[in-house]
Length: 269
Image (cartoon, rainbow, N blue to C red; front, top):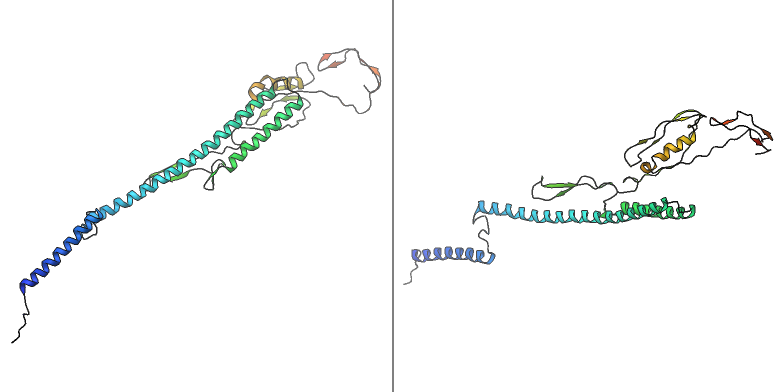
């Protein structure tokens, strides 16, 4: 006669223990293969939260290092470009010094000026085209640029690079002009003579007396030529309403307050 054992307590205990052992063995093998103590939240919930936070911070710091390298690359690019600009400015200074001596003719000075103009164009070209990843560096647009160098939002640095075009770095161009003044006091001012400040000349009396007039004004300008870089020449001309006829001046004939005396002159002198 057959019979069935519905309950085997020993077998059930053996199966339960075997299952627990298999689970613990899987956990041990997982830790051994990964090298991690915590592989899931079931292992250590709080420990896993801390580990995830540290892992995220480490990844962020790695990117922050890359950001710092980009910032260094930007500054190095700008530094090399400005180094080339300094070489150009040195060359311009040499040519300006060469042109300043009186051994040069008008033709050679014009040639030197043409060279300087081309160098100025190259200076501006460097300022307008130097860029990093499409961002211009020396045109004046690189202002308060922020770089994230840490895991926190406040761990940043800012950098600014000023414009380096010839019109922005103190290279000033003086244009010629004219001013009509028959008499009185004349005082000239050079705007931004050193790229920043204005320079005022001493007042000069304009009249027909001795020591006044255009000659005195030119002397005042040339007196400080080493400071301003500006020199002046003057030419006095007289234009009559009609052609001059032959004759003689009076005994008390004066020019600029100086008695000249009689002067004979011919037609059309």
